[in-house]
Image (cartoon, one colour):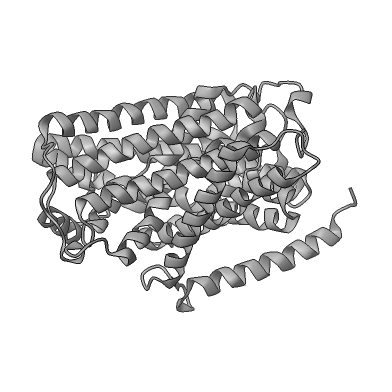
Length: 458
């Protein structure tokens, strides 16, 4: 028994043609971005190689646990909308409403903006003399146009970008393993000389959470799958497991071939335009390798921005169908929700021109972790519901518990770290991040109450 409308009772339209491997592609495209090629450099300032690999493994376990918990929820609620739909159904419409607005303003618009920013930065490393703002705006307009008007073009374009991205990241790993060192690195930062430094370790998990975010991407377009109850859970688990393996291999290439001197020089140079991948490829292959790395980064970022532009508007379309946004954002059956896609693109464009990369990563990682933890808690409710004949099962409950505990630790360090618990806002200046989100929650609560009074009953 599903807790919401079962898509098996709805005729399969031209919009419902996504299969398992398209879902896996969406997950991988959302997960693999710039973070894995920059975050290890900052981690290496305090963490030894073994601790860096351990942190990525812990982050991967958290992501896979989340994917397993979400798989149970996706089977119970096989509808589009992601956390908006899940939290509305499992807990309260107010929580879903909050998740929907967070998705619009932070969860999708902000990552699209960040990826487009980085494309603008990396084009400079290819000798293209164009202002990064022009390139950034062009990327957002391009991916918005790709996904706004035609579902077939949207799906095909995304599949091509994913295929190129996977080819390049696997090629990077092969070059690193074949041409680079495979000996265990002997370097160790001062902070790790006497064991694992818990503060930097858990702080790094916040950034790693952002790098792994996207493992739940398939849930946002569940109703566009031909068999959502079967393929959406599998797509999350397969895609997440594949990315964990790729991330661990990429990090091994970094720690085996780079030293603290490399990391320090990278941070002191221009980490917004040069990744650790550039450093490795230049050492192993030469200048041509660094240029290939820039091309890889551009494709990877375009793929991620494209995937988030494809799935994010499905959340706002679901909210519009439920009466929480104007009906124009709902779209039409068999076609993309045009106005929802355009809305997200417009917000991403504004964010791209005003938000710094490092602070935005911290914000996104924290917020997405909180919403995902609330969704995972729903597995316990499903398991304890005596009315349900189909239970999530012990494995899903254990996975949900692991995910919630690890998420709690990451949130604690996010709100207590001097680096992560403040944000610079225009006019206001530096302000506490928890205060920003408290004000945001209060504001959304007021809007929800007003909107609910205006909505027709039923």
